[in-house]
Image (tube, rainbow, N blue to C red; front, side):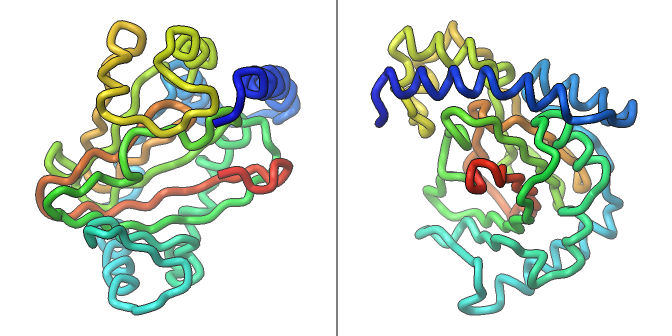
Length: 254
């Protein structure tokens, strides 16, 4: 873990950098501006029915095909054989390039982060129920303890409370709140992974997690410097795409 002074110096740099970047991001459409405002307020915005069910089904079949290919570059599976991930999946399934290059999501990303360019790729994933699975992402975490992070998540299958839905603690992207957790001893300098007990210990400081239940085709736009996780899957399988958006100026900081 970094020292407290190092942590605070990085916080100060980020606090200075964000408004400058956003001020030079350029104009966006009214719809994108609405979504940006929602992400700034809560840490997330939801777009139901962004893709048609048939398009989601085709992408899910592409993921099944990737799961059947041994030793595929960019593939990863957890020890439980529950979380199947394919980084830069668009290289192997060109149908996924449209998600990487989606115009509305790009508008929101650019306006929210202030970064005119990003290193983007699609993570295609299938979560299968296995006893003792930790859920997508391996539990509660922040994608970065300091630098602003933005992702778009697309459900390719209907996601109920049983299917490992995405969870996020609203408002926990706020730097003031994260510094408050630090001051109260509920977070260590630079900490970005948290146990269930640590999250429970934040009661009274952070809000209750929001669970994102949704039909296939739902998109979640999120500031993933908020506390978030994929809940442990209790039944069936969950198919999803995640758009990663790194910052070239920081050496592709995912």
